[in-house]
Image (cartoon, helix red, strand yellow):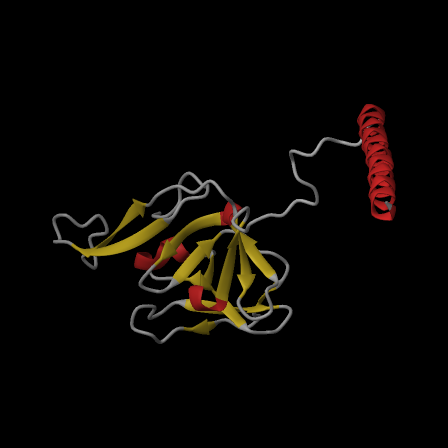
Length: 197
């Protein structure tokens, strides 16, 4: 079954190719599915409802993506995803004959995607996966935002030794200020004496 293999954070795209009957691994319809891996990403991704921002899944359950259907495929979702109770038969040309259950958000009831409970052979890789529509889901890459710290990392921690050093520096500044004040008084006194003469 295409799309199954080593699970992890990677982007897998399913591409449909027309092949001849001799090359067809399926032998019936002349289509085969090829799995293309794109560049790896280290940071985990959280998928959120596009409307109310409730988390609906993460990249740890990532199976792949399907660009032509604009879907991401997950093997697990959070409890914020409501699975519909009534399956229906799809009548679209690409999904003809599929038995589908809709997915919606628990918080705002907006549609999120679907689960294929029964599929023709050429769509078996989608069966029992949570297929989220990209237009209904936002994603957040952990560690992607700029982070702020309460204190500068180069500041020294306040210890008894550090406080003693600060107190000593404050004492020196006070002594310098007193010395300058005395000199200023002496200069003022000399100026007043010179004006009287």
